[in-house]
Amino acid sequence: MHENVRKEIKRGAAESILSVKFVYAQTKMDDTPGDKARTLSKTFEAYYKVNSGQEDRHQSIEQIETALASASQQLDDNYATLFDPIFEDLRTFGVGTITPVQKPRIVSLIEASGILRGSTRIQYPSGDDDFHLPEGHNGLGYSKLIFTILQVISFHQTYERTTPKPALQVLFIEEPEAHLHPQMQETFIKNIQDFIDRKTGWKVQVIITTHSSHIVASSGFHTVRYFDRSEPQLTVKDLSTFEANVKAAPQGDETLRFLRQYMVLHRCDMFFADKVILIEGTAERLILPEMVRRCAKGLLHQYVSVIEVGDAYAVRFRDLIAFLNVKTLVITDIDSVCPKHRKACPPGQGQTVTSNSTLKHWLPAKSSIAELLATDPADKEQGHVRVAYQIPETDSGACARSFEDAFIIANAEPLARDFRQLALKVAFVKEVGADPTADEIEAKAYDIAQRLSDHKTDFAFDVMLLEDWAVPRYIAEGLQWLA
Image 1 (cartoon, rainbow, N blue to C red):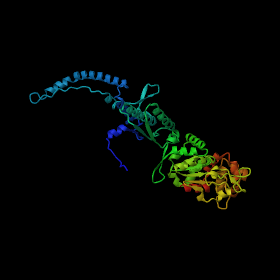
Image 2: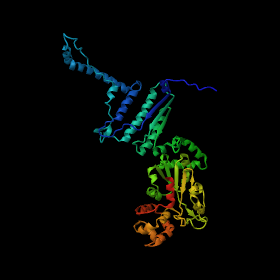
Image 3: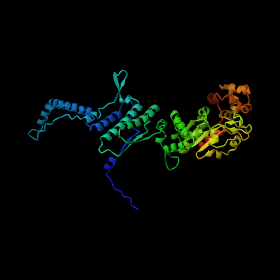
Image 4: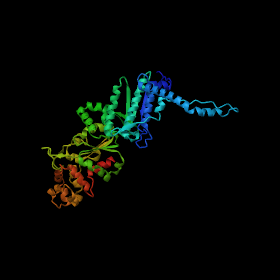
């Protein structure tokens, strides 16, 4: 076996092979009227330094230096006239006793870099361009964007000037989303790649660290490296591997197309979440924050991503959630139907089955309503994922089919007391009359919910008007598991 042979090289030699540039997030941007930071102005000064040595490409810089040399000569003549009497007086000091004070000469030393240093100012036109505003009056977002772009351009200019060219260049950009609004984030991530592609022969690896769902969505799966810190040992996961695995599975292309489209159209922040909740409808999404406060306060101190997917599409997130290895709760409806006609019916009627894709094909992978209701809570879990669907509020009670009738069963008493203040009270009146009891509302929960099927968002707002209500049992159990 050959022993490892190591040879030390000088730092300069290493830097000639590998060139690295960092654009940090915490720049000293200032948008106060005092304009003290002047970060952009100083950045343009630095850009001048980088490019001042390129004689063939920067004629404008040579013109600046030629003009400054001419101005310097005129100043020298003016200085001589102005200060000559003072110099003569200085010479009289020490005459006859010590060596006379030597006559100094004052000359102007004006360099282009010196002129820029401390003298460069960025200003922005205002109104009809009659006056300009200083750098500090521009928004932090635009200042940060200009700063970042200029850093990248300077890195490329340095590469162009360097001989020999470094074999590998790496550009690190830390959290470019700071101060950038979402549209600007998306534009930046697209344009940075276009900029690099336009620079012929510039082989640079760009590494961007981010917490922005907009940047992730605009980048595509194949560029994302996900840092999984759910275990003590951090793991870096390549989402191009996930993409390849899904593509090889049945209907993989369709699943990938759906996930890409979802990430673009929705704020998909599950990549940065401590935990994820997949929900089926708008009503659950609107009321979920209050349900968390009522039965699982521990989640209030964690970063929980809530994704509204519906029962038909939750399964398409299965591979992505497993790949990210993040703890996930899927809240869905039992969706009981008659096995013969496939029409909706209460879960307790005959040999009913579920029409819910999540329950049939993911968790707990059962179709019979009787089997679903008999499923042990441990069998509703798989790895870091748990499903929650309707179960009886009491062990001997009736089971709901949807969130609405589950809520009505769990809150029959407060609804009987306060339903007159609800905007949708007509749905109750048509089923249980104008003065119902809690038992009557509970017995007719399924029928009332059917009347509310086209008004689920309004029902959620009605729930917010109730003074006191309970979280349906299946959701409470799921949230407590997640917490």
